Image (cartoon, rainbow, N blue to C red):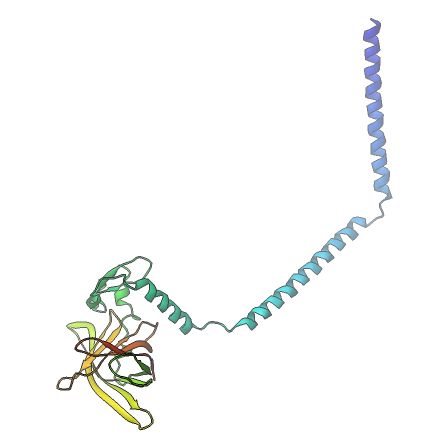
Length: 261
């Protein structure tokens, strides 16, 4: 029919027009591509690379400036300081963590064993901490070791702050009971600095590996006036937290932060 013929003609015209438009667009693209000067892509790539290099150089300069600023903030922290800080944290974590007569095994898992089982050549802690070299060091009880600090009195006597010294004069570690070292020592302090009046007390006791404590009481045959307890809980064998006390009542009279000298 006439209508069908008209539809076919219109369809053929539409396809022809579409093809013409496509060829026209391709021709324009080709002309535009031919109009681009040779080497433009290379020039553009070179420009991008140069910009990236400038940016990297800028970042590198900023990094060096940050490093210089960081280095000016403070010196590197030495191992001794790190050790002391770790010891303080451990003291806070272990405070009251174990029952009386026990000591902490340390580590991430909480465990306590008798302080008399430390350094007896048999591992009782699961992590073996009770037998490690650091914990079982005999350094605090070596003969000739002296520890000194400024004693501040809070009871027992009215004395101005003064130097106090604890000196180890003898030590013995027995094979059948190696958890402690038996020691003898002398406590010395200035009663009057201006008059150079000095007091000395002969003491005897032991160093407890489990608690890392030096416990000294009056020597036999002497008047029981004062004793000393030094806790080596500051991360090494050279620093201790010391207290002067009355042996009969265990009343604490004075305190000093002791340093080996």
